Amino acid sequence: MNESPAAPSGAPAKTAAARPEPEGAAAPPGHPAAPELPAVPAELHAELVAFRRDLHRHPEVGRQEFRTTEQVRARLERAGLQPRVLPGGTGLVCDIAAPGDDRPRLALRADLDALPVPDTKAVEYRSTVPGRAHACGHDAHTTIVLGTGLMLAALLAEGRLPRPVRLVFQAAEEIMPGGALDAVKAGVLEGVERILAVHCDPKVEVGRIGLRVGPITSAADKLKLSLEGPGGHSARPHLTTDLVMATAKLATELPAVLGRRVDPRSGLSIVWGRIEAGHAANVIPQHAELEGTVRCLELAAWHDAPDLVHEVIDQVASMYRAKCEITYQRGVPPVVNEADSVELLRDAMTRRHGAHAIEDTEQSLGGEDFSWYLEHVPGALARLGVRPVGDGAARDLHQGDFDIDEGALTVGVELFTAAVLLS
Image (cartoon, rainbow, N blue to C red):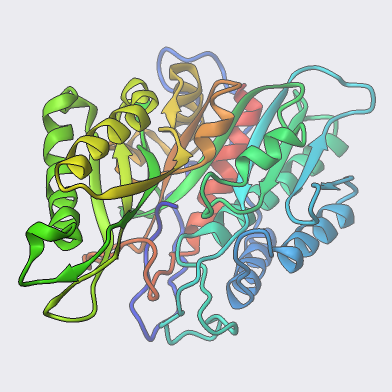
C-alpha cells in the first residue's frame, strides 16, 4: 500500500551503483569493530535485476500470487534452502539456520502482490497482464528479501552466519486488512524476536534510506454508508426523506464533527471516494451510498475511531429521518517503528554505505499491513530510495508509470545482510 520511484516513461529504469563503502569498512567512531559486511557480487546483482523484471512482467494481485510464490520457492530451493508455502498456496516462509539452531529468529519480510492498475511504461519488462502492474514496488521488496536469503545461505555454508534468520514472503498486502494477518495466523512469527522490512519510496534517491522512530505510516480503514428512505417528488421534500440532502450533510458534517471530537494531533480524517444518489432531477431517491477511507496517525485514536464514527453518523442521519446502514471495515493500524530496530537499520546502513546514506522521514497517511507483525514482535520498516540520481520529477506510488532504479536492489540486500550480521 505504500512507496517507489518511476523511471521516465519510455526508458528502462537506470541501474545505478549506490555509492557503497569498501567491503569491511571500518566502524564509525564510537562503534565496536564491525564484522565483515559483504557486498553483493555483480553476478548476483544481474540475477536479481532479471528476477525482478520477470516478476514485473507477470504481476499477480492479492491471493493470486501463485506464479510469484513458485518462482521464489524454486530459487530458494536451488540455494539449498527449504521454503514452506503458506496455507492457500500463496506466500511462503523460509528459515536459514544451522541444523538444531532454535535460537530466536530475525525475520525479514516481503510482500508479493501487485495492483489492479494498467502499466503505462514503455520498457521491455512492461506488464504482460492487462490492467495489472507492480505499481508499488512489491516486486522489488520480494527480490531484495530473496537476494538477502541467497547471501545468507552462502554465509551459512561458510560457517559465517551468526544467527538464524527467517524470510517471510506474504500475500495480499494491498487487500484490507492485509495478508500479514494470514501469515501471522500461519505461525510465521513463532520463534521470531524482531522483524524488519523496507518499502520503496520514489521521493528518496537511490543509495539512501529514510528512517523514523515511532509511527511511520497511518491507520487506514474503509467506511461505507447505505442510506434508505421512502423517496418522493422533489416538490414535496417535507413529506419524504430527502436522501440527497442527508447524504450531502453526512459527506460534509462527519469529517467536520470528527475534527472537533478528537485531538487534532491524532490526524483522524475521513475522505470520500464515492457518492451516489438519485437518477432524475425531480425525484428524491430511495437509496444513496457513500464510500471512503478513515485514516489516523495515532494508534489510540484508531482504536476509538469506529465507535465515534458510528455515533456521529447516527446523529446526523436521524436529523433527516434517514435509515443508515454502516459498514466499517477495519484496515491496518499504523506501523510503529521500535527504537532498537531503527538503530539496527541505521547502524547497518551507516557501516555499509556511510552516514550520508540515511535521512529522516515523515509519517505518511498511507497504510501498510506490516503493522500487524509489530502488534506481536518489535521491528521497523525503512523507506528505500528508488529515485534515479538527478531525476527531479515528482513521482508517486500506485501509478501506471511507477518504476525503480534497480541499483536499489543491491542497496536493500546489503542493508538486510548487514543488519543480520550486526544483530
